[in-house]
Length: 185
Image (cartoon, rainbow, N blue to C red; front, top):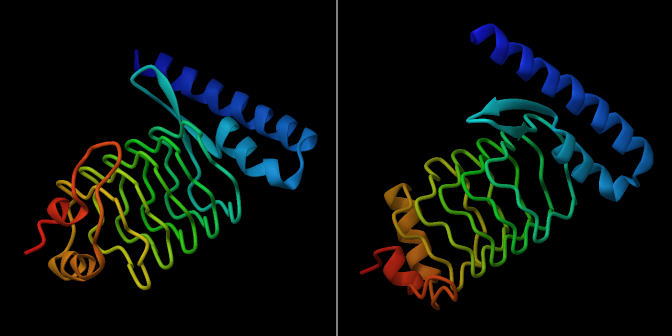
């Protein structure tokens, strides 16, 4: 069984690589980022579905608006100035990724891994970060958090204290007040 799983995973990676190369030839530079995800920088077979892995890929200024990126691993990737507005990022991983200047307005970011990610100047307006993990994330100049749901987010006390100083509004999807979700005093 392990051998069969390994064969299937290898076939998926090879097929993904071919698809990525073919897509890259036919796409403009703006669409190249999407081709990398759809084909996968690499892929893994997990519970019968393929998960794209983009470890270390430069995807600066790419547009992911309204895309279903559930479970995609953007670990250690460079994603500066990207548009993730209204994207489904449920359980995606941005571990050690550079997200500076990106927008996540209204995005589903439930259970997202933001550990050690650079969130400098990121726009999280209206995002749902329920149960996200962001210990060690850089939140320098993170100011656009209106209407964001931070329920059960694992973060350091200093991060929570800072966010409480700028928190306001209510998440339009969950109906939870931003300050309440951060457990602000």
